Amino acid sequence: MISEKFQEMIREMSAATDRTIGILDKKLTIIASNDKQILGKKSEIESFSLVSSNDFIRQNGFTYRYFGDKKTDEFILIISGEDDLALSYANLLAVSLAQIVVYYNNKHSKSVFIKNLIFDNMLPGEINFRTRELKISDDVNRVCFVIKSESFMRNLNLVDILRNIFPDATKDYILDIGDNSVTLIKEIDKTIDESQLEKLAVSVVSSISSEYYIKIVIGVGSIVQDIESVRDSFRHAQLALEVRRLFSNEKSVSMYSQLGIARLIYQIPVALCELFLKEVFKKCTIDSIDGDLMFTINKFFENNLNISETSRKLFVHRNTLVYRIEKIKRVTGLDLRNFEDAIVFKIALMVSKYMKEFNIHRTGR
Image 1 (tube, rainbow, N blue to C red):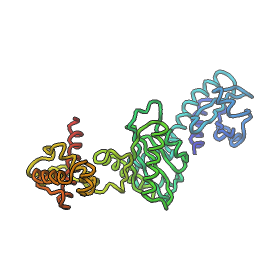
Image 2: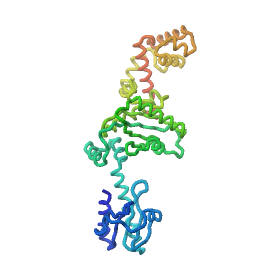
Image 3: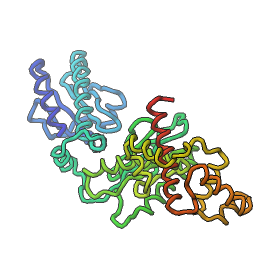
């Protein structure tokens, strides 16, 4: 407990002064002191706020000095005497005690633990120990959302916005992970499935967009059953966002469970991708296909290789579409009316898009 840390500090300070030193919690109980007779007793001051609002007061033969963090833990240091030396002691000691509060809260904070967990800064044995120490449930389902802002945030804070939407800080952890991104580790009922998570993510996007005029995208990780697996869900959510950026950036929500073939392509070595494209496009390169033909190809895929529906969406005659498909066959050697050729072409388009993004990141252009 933090009172033990305070006691150690007071014991060291006692060697330098003969003053009585004590620390009060918000209930005005003396939780640490070099005078064992007053440990556990109540202070005589009127209220905690009397000291916190004034920083320090002198009363009843003691100097009372406020320290701590208003967002976490607040305390009052008491030193016998109402003289200037007592206040000097109090000011000096309060600085060290405040650092103890910060250190203790960081060490024992659930949020800090979760952040270290998802960034893989902990050993397996340490995870189990800290889970028990922090009294974090290890038998509940959780899922990780990675939420990224694509808008200028002005004076808004994405963590605060999400805390308004998910106010239960005992079950849901919201952490700033940099790059205009926040992760939400949410505890969920064991009956909730992937479709319900997608609806939740879509509602968050809609709510933030309509209320704060901020465009966000969300990657939804896998559902996990234990605390150690939360980092897997986090990585899956990150992967969902990255794959979305490469292959389906028109979507605001990307589900790890729905990545399908895009996940597979993303994990294929670059050398194999290059070899695959050379094997598919023997007659030409994919970049040599003109824009009109590529637009036709994409519409044909969007309409599940249905010629009638595609021609209707393109506002062209059926025979015109057939002519274009024949032209694609002459240029590439692949007949999109053939299911196997269509699959190969679709995969090749995705691989080509992945390779372009890879080269952009590699060259920085």
